[in-house]
Image (cartoon, rainbow, N blue to C red; front, side, top):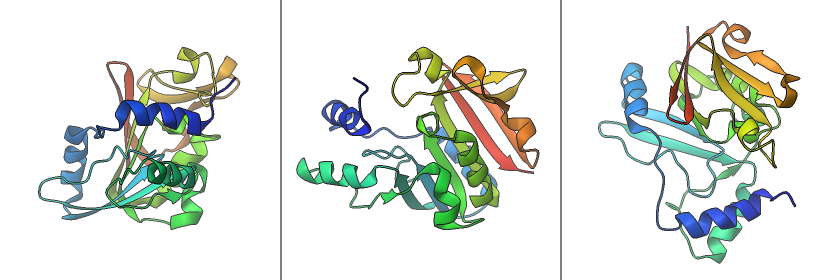
Length: 206
């Protein structure tokens, strides 16, 4: 039986109820410095019940927006288990629909960890992120390398994120879809690298 996102959440709750994973602060701080702003609007995409984007960075005021496609279920489960995550509401929204939800040029930082490879169309999601990004902003993506292949395309894991010849690629099972993200979006610069078992992508407008 393929686990639903909610059953996966229940596993996460029991294992992470006393911890809150933070995103790569060194990477984020480097990108924040480039914006030369003290107030940063941050969008955390696919944040889950325990948002990974953190709350505070020295010298910056972070105005954080949290979205997840099953936000309502997470709120119900958090309430049932008497867990209060910073008293911040998670907005119910799919990554493919963020442009319709928020508009253009709104966020200095758009962050997604281990979420886009669970979406129906991660390429459309990235296209939306680029439109939402301010001219001096950055998209920070952190995912497991070839997660679909590693899990044998089990459940939500239908996409592979990997690097070929220095370029960021997204592919599906059997490589029926293979997309070079660098060439698809020539209006951005994409810095991609591996960090242990993860692929990190930093995307900036040219």
